[in-house]
Length: 87
Image (cartoon, rainbow, N blue to C red; front, side, top):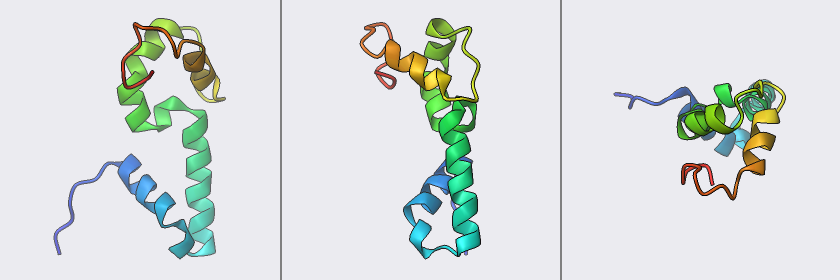
């Protein structure tokens, strides 16, 4: 069987969709990774690739890890200069 190349975020997204089919131990790990990913933009590859430039421009002094980057981006949500993938 050949496996298609997937990113780590694709794999995690798949596990999140099928979480009810996973063992309790695996569910716990998926939820833990999901929580980490939601608090740190650097752990969410898709979001980082889509918004990284905007984060560096409008939130340069905000440090990832506590959800503050998301809060900062939300403050600039209506900024017409943000990438379409962010706004």
